[in-house]
Length: 218
Image 1 (tube, rainbow, N blue to C red):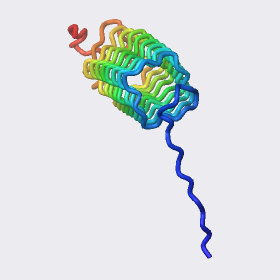
Image 2 (image 1 turned 180 degrees about the horizontal axis):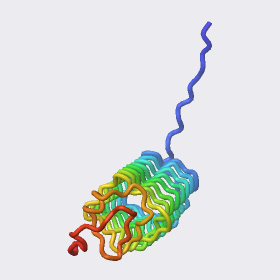
Image 3 (image 1 turned 180 degrees about the vertical axis):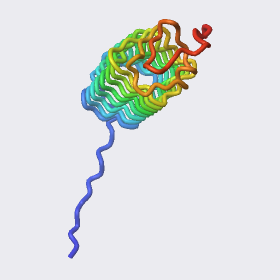
Image 4 (image 1 turned 120 degrees about the vertical axis):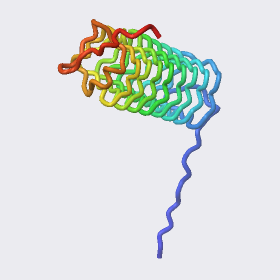
């Protein structure tokens, strides 16, 4: 005789619940709401729609935001260490001053996102779309940009110690003026030729500044 086993359905997301650590808002719509300072530590926010929502100053530590929509949302000053932002849609999102050390932004859509002053040590931006993203005074120590699209992104005033991974990143007009990239991993001459540096830009051994430097103001 065949044993009959019961299969319990997965618990449904509680879209009507108030912000709380560990909550389940999977696939919920939280568009255009104002919930700054919320405690969403460890929350399941997979595919949640936060379009134009104010999450500034919130605690998103270890939260799962994979495939969430964050277009024009504000996470300014949020805590998001070890959070998962993989495959998010975050056009013009505000991440200024956010602390997101060890967070994953793999394959994320981050065009024109603002990372001013963000702490992104050990962040993973592999295959991310970062066209015109702003990293003014952001901390990028140990960050990975493998295969990322950094076209017209501004890294010129970012800070980092040691290596930064740029292998196969697309760097068309990427602003790297004044950066010490001497320890950059995976950086090739073809990428340097497309980027915008200046006399203060330091390159790995074997690479040289192209004749087109410095670039005209964008």
